[in-house]
Length: 167
Image (cartoon, rainbow, N blue to C red; front, side):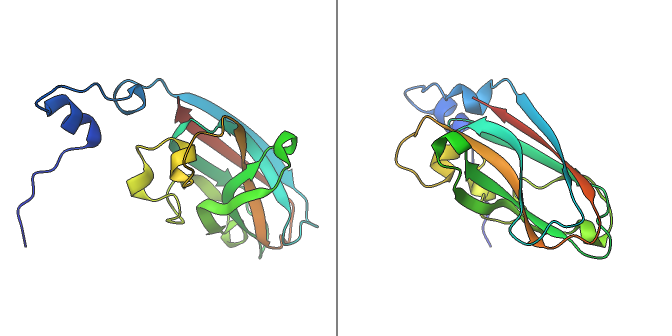
């Protein structure tokens, strides 16, 4: 075991011999919120997608709150990223934020799912989205945050996501 005395990036910069200003996304970022509600039908099958919110590639994701009504005895979704339809609409990472959320197990109250899957890890919390995706530069585009059905729903259900982010 070891006693550790560590600092976040912003505090390392502030305490450096040559004082460095930290990016505002680490010290004084104003939060924005994108919110969306979608209704999945009882016939929603595996692979169905529900685009809920849109964020720019230079956003630092602060929090994703997800909630849903019960979907009967079955129904699971991943929460991830897709390119916007204007950029081809392809999946970027279907479970970037959360995997196998289970409205089939009952209603999900507003729950922070930002790092649930571990793909967008705790170590990525200071990074803009493009960097957390492993890109070498900002593509300067938008991404859709979407729910992807990984287990078919028995009943129709509502899903809501509140995405808090800053630039």
